[in-house]
Image (cartoon, rainbow, N blue to C red; front, side, top):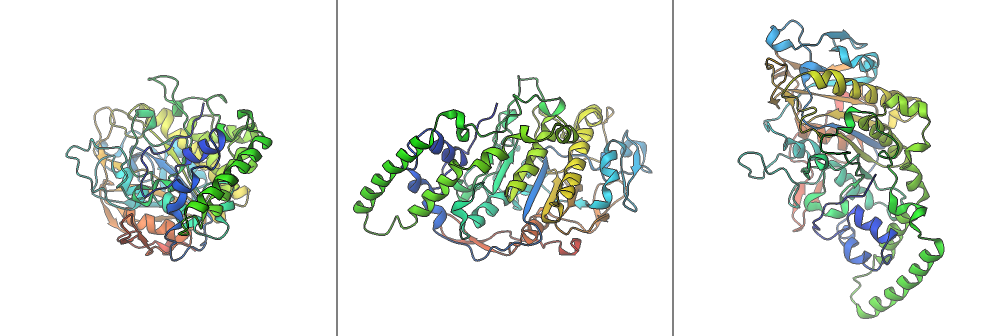
Length: 480
């Protein structure tokens, strides 16, 4: 079953998605809204305009998929490098894709494959770097400090949420702009991993995250068929079954009006000038039929659900499509590591062959084709990436260690050039030798595609101007 999660700490004031829904579904609606939403009205940004992409679906493969078992195969390399799988031809000249990615190979003429993502942060805290465009700077001698903190940099999705809320009419939107599926990153391992939150920007801009859990300690819902009871993505506090009638909601509104009057009599300094707008925005979320319907995956035809795959990643990817179709602007779909490994394939290639590669292949290819058939691909940027790759030299059982120096990223939609490969690695897929791409470059490319100035200046919680991304350049030449 699903619960709504939120980052527990409040920073720079602001409302977590969980709190907004709790206030609407269970508490005295609106009484404390001003205190928790005031900060987001304080400093409007300089600009926000749509680019080619109206929305982004960010498929995050946590743990580090192997470049040598996916999009940068080296069949002529020594046996200790090339791996246990064979390449298959794709529809892109010069691109050989792993045999277990056959459906993706068949649609590669719709994709741009970047082979040369690179950075020096060789552990899983690079999830902060990939999701924010900022290096991990927290001092942790052995990388054990994996949980998010309010001093972290804001995720790309949180920045999009922040900028979007400054636009006229944003308080009437019926769906949050930043959504995280199917759970907070690390939740299935007992972590609250960094990079996914709004950090110092303020927890008001955290994603609305669903929370689908494991059956038990040994379960991996990414590796099996999931039933509808577990895949109930609907937001329970917005469901009519919670007993919040329209009459009760009207009474809460009346009571709220009385509180408003009293507060305005007390405060004569104009502090509450944005209260009505904040109240309208929260109310529009709580009463949104569109939002309830978007989270009900059972509205999809069985044939579509089968096409994506009934495993957790497939159904979450389908839900990602439903979210952008309903109007969300940045949706992260994470393939997490409930077994502690998954894409972090240290031990063997068994899970790659049986679950990881086929599961991604099915869901990713279905998403691209589904978006195109619905006329959404031209306005949706799809990004598929991990935080690192794997070591060129494998183990005796064909596991591979961490390797952040060269790994792939796949782009599609929103005007991205189709059927191309960008960047070239050395003969062992260990280092870029042409067109290296940094996480800063990727972040700026996403912002640029959305029509956000990649060099935009934000203000932190101390009102200091800081660049949204400190370095890098958008890869505009990858777009037609």
